[in-house]
Image 1: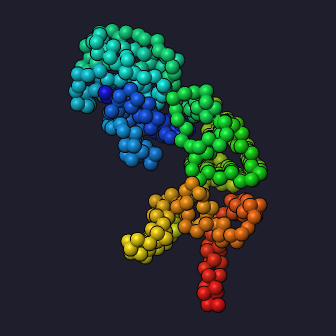
Image 2 (image 1 turned 45 degrees about the vertical axis):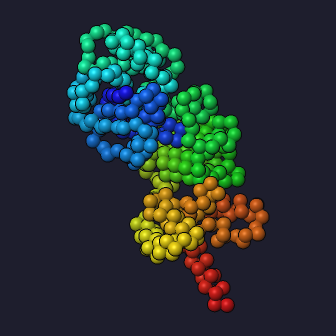
Image 3 (image 1 turned 120 degrees about the vertical axis):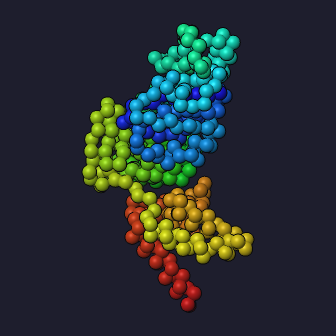
Amino acid sequence: MRAFLLAGPPEGATDDLARPIAGAPLFVRQLEWLRQSGVREVVINRVSDSPLPPSLGPQPLAATGVAVTWIPSSEPLSFSALARRVRPSGDVVLVLPHAVLGDLVFSPFLEQARQDKGDVLLVRNDVRVQLRHLPSNGTAARIELTEGWLLEVGSEAVAHTLVESVLSGECRGVDVRGTSLAPGIWRARGALVVEGATVIAPCFLGLHTLVAEGATVGPGAVLDAGAVVEPNAVVCHARVAENVVVGQGIRLERACALPGRIVRHSGRVTAIDDPLLLGLRGPSGFPVRLAAAAALVAAAPVSALGSATAQSLVMRLARILARRGAWVGVRDDADPDAVVFDIMALLIPPEALDEERTAAKAYYAAKKSPRLDAKLLAGWFLGAVRTVRS
């Protein structure tokens, strides 16, 4: 079965499709949902000139098992115009508006449309989805009022309301990409909550996020991958975008923190030029990745001989090159290859108490910087040299 997604507003189309829904982009959620009804190909009209974000690249979309065909145009195309751009088919196709998500299973309606040889219009919550024949037979569509839910996720406010319902378990049909720590509290791999922080359900802590001591996250908080909430900051019914740092003492409520600006759920945009209030957690720079590449070249021959230690090192260096790892950091048991040097081994001895480890993690989370990492590595190396010489 094939589905057609009509174009949305050009100025927000890419943002809508890439907006995270409980750990995965909206477009990925759409493809997963449509696959349950037997959809194997999606044709989508795209008007925006902005490049697609990495989260909508070929690899994440291919993992859904649905083939995607992008049809670019200078203006939004109607269903008929869009159908003319692709290979004709006499089968029934599914036609959806931009950014629609739900839990409906279309298979029963598809069989009805095939048997009746007529189009079907499905209506729920003012959202309209069609089952149409190619080529069109010109008959009027039969209207069906459906059970379940359909929602057009065309704004940050609507998306956040949906995510809160998913996290709290009120909305079915969307799987959270994470582990449940408590009812309504979800954590993705590598997320760290420092002792002294407050986490209130419902909330979602994305990949490698950090909630510092004294910070409050929730209710209704969503932290995208790499986001940081600094001490005494509050995130309530709000989302912090990928790699964005919410500064100390900031209260973010019913809004989304993006690089350099805050988008209120009401639609108002506030520019924030002060990086201490709203900063950006940058990825590994070129020198860091260059050093990783040099080390990778040196370690690869030893790894080929079957050394388990060398193989682990090669994997960690490859993560740095892909900007998904670091030289120095807190090693997570769930993701041991995210860092090369475990900060715990550099700051405290192996026999340290749990309280000392917690204090060291909190210190490192508050002070982490390239300069601090360089000092720790230099201190470790000089200490190792002295140990060897002695």
